[in-house]
Image (tube, helix red, strand yellow):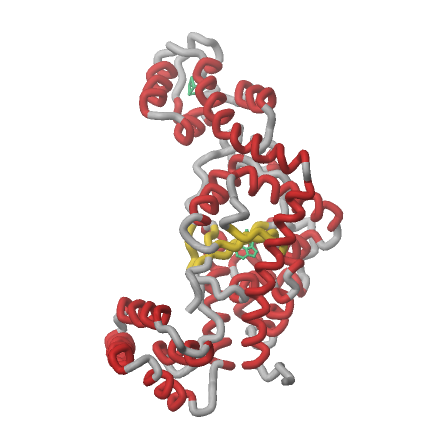
Length: 400
Ligand code: TRP
Ligand code: SF4
């Protein structure tokens, strides 16, 4: 019913590192040329855990957006915005909260996990429990069909689907729906109407997903249907309800294969990161001082790449001949560790070069970033307002 929109967000954590790049951003950059994409800074989500220290949210947001742009998110392709600048997210969150069972929220695995992990914070709050519901509003408000997320977020997307389904069930009732839907079918013209009915039967009686897809494509192509007839026909395909909100799919992002400098997960709290915009000297120094296989105490000691975090970097950055050179040289003590690290340094610097260049123009003129985000907020808001008009109407809140 809606173009295959992609929505994803990140909490404002400040400057991004190469783990973020290889784990998420690179994927966003690819997606933006394939689908209409909306990428936003989830500043309200940051407050669910850091409500007592909001001072860094704003600067972290700008740093993060600059890094998105540096990584290649292109504002002429993707919409970049800030969650709190589209207050409709909060309105939908509120309205969804009316019918969301507490049990659904309590059962989301991240709820207990995060409370345990962030034990130094009091997360027995209303806002924190509602974290995944706010996230559902973030996505459902754009009627997005895909949400690129890491594995930990898949249960959140599952819950969004349930929320959308429940919403459509509760509010997608319409008096005389069947009759109106049948009238709308006629408006497709006899040939299309016949095909629509056949596909609908195929889907409903035999569960053929491709029949559903075909029928949706047919509706996408159909001209001269009113918005409400179109919606009816989409809803009629799957049952006898209007589809007000769309059930999104998780688009699983592979975990970053790039660990931190010490071989653990790359994370600011472990102090083992390479920032997207670290300068040449910093990168060189960080890699040169990386720990290696502890068995290689002296240059003449043989080592084992499997026991060395530098090898993990080669796995991400090096071609096959280089990797063969590493394995052979390490196991035979034919190369020194600094020698082994050089191709990694070179590859990272090469990867970062265009990023540093892109970032520079935004650092030189921060008003460019402000303008990109302001524009993105406007665009996002238009879409969000469209959905909210329908939502309010279905919930009896339009007061016309
Ligand atoms: N919860 C996500 C995370 O921690 C961030 C997020 C907020 C998000 N709203 C979203 C991701 C909507 C995808 C879609 O990474
Ligand atoms: Fe690690 Fe390379 Fe040194 Fe082997 S030679 S221990 S792979 S840095």
